Amino acid sequence: MCGQEGLWFHIDGAYGAVGVLDPAVEPFYRGMEAADSLALDPHKWLSVPVECGCVLVRDAQLLRDTFSLVPVYLRTEPDKGFGGLPWFSEYGFQQTRGFRALKLWLTLAGAGREGLTEIIMRHNRLAALLRDKIAADPEMDLMAAGHLSVVCFRLRPMGIADDQLDAMNKGIVDRIQSEGECFLTSTVIGGRFALRASILHYETTEEDLDVLLNAVRRGALAVG
Image (tube, rainbow, N blue to C red; front, side):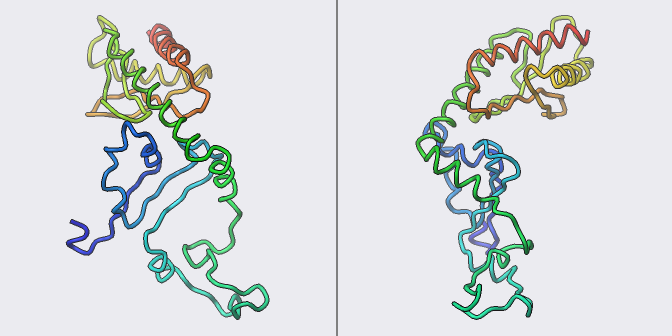
């Protein structure tokens, strides 16, 4: 549709774009290569220290045509002084900037494609295992069937009324976050409060999944 209507096709892949490295889920990414621009945050799944956000643009000249503004005091002659365009300041709003790309370069150089692929595949396998554990527990609800390393679920103990589940699960998140043994965030799916586990750390193990689920169960007891 974007091609037919002459529209810019942008993809927000902040967390999930690098999941394309996993051959098991790569088919779900078909069409991503047609994007005019793709945003991703290496400080998420690639574990690059914050902050590190990236945008990939198919036609760099369009980006430069949009943002380039070189005032008189910055104009240079090619190959003279510190001349030699283009400057990165011509590709966005920011003029002076630090070398944020260095930490991403070091991650890519150190792990390589194979290393990053192995990490992402392992995270997806762990997430699938966590979903299996949740589905097998009669007191837990899997809130969304996914393919990547984010798992959304909630605790649903016997005898707890449906109208009390949101408050109870919110209390579980608050308690887990304050205890510090593991970490969960939350979201809302279909109008219902959900626990959100995101497996992103390169040293996460299967045992950590049990630690997380046990913490959720203890949190329910504490919340009452």
